[in-house]
Length: 329
View 1 (cartoon, rainbow, N blue to C red):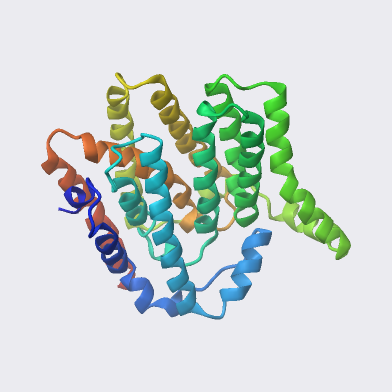
View 2 (view 1 turned 60 degrees about the vertical axis):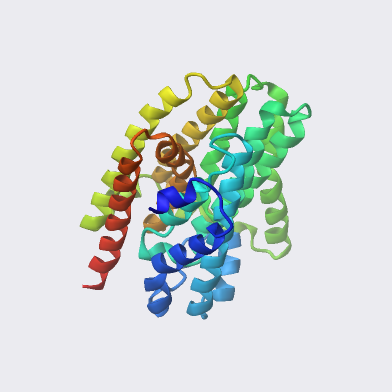
């Protein structure tokens, strides 16, 4: 029913989206005192924001919900304006909100929520590069946006690899483009380094960064049974969706196929970024939700038997709610 509702944007769509989000965030608003902001091994900008709201748990949850609700519209605008899906559909934004509400730990101002905001803008600019004449400026801007996302959440810096890959996809991978992207990436760190130097904190902060850096900590984590089942479900649905996507793109213009290729690499880079997580394991999968919301939207939009779309989506909602209820035991 909800999938059918969001296939076409209607006057009531923002209200239905709001109500759906409030239902999925109900446990967060009720148990807001259990959603503390963790600043362990936090990136500089998130450390700054986190300190502002650390002692206000209800405000933390409320602002996170508003921020996510706003991002849902950003994701939908990106998908429809770049012709990734029917211009009248609101499925990408709806699915992004649902996927980003899938676990209790994500119902707060976690660092991935901030990183995603800048990555959405960066992805929008990357997809614009195909039609731009002044590419160097856009490449510099994307590098800087990725850098800012990384200053909220360090693993987001891996998306610099996506920028280089995108330049290759668009046949723009040359020395000038790579240098422009590197300068964009380094610019925020340069300002941050100057600030730390003037505060006589550069050596200390550099040491903290190096000591907090680690690889493959994912394999040391113990995830709940429901997290594993839900992850397996999303993984299988993603594989099935990407296979269907190849058929969907068969008769599409080159411009659209290239944009979807970038989106697929966004998903792959998101998977690679898991290797660089040091602390925020329970929210890191939020980086995957941007590409998944777009490709899942195509799957639910184009599936021939519409009843199956509702079945798959109902199963997704069931697993999300089951995980939330299981946590209360």
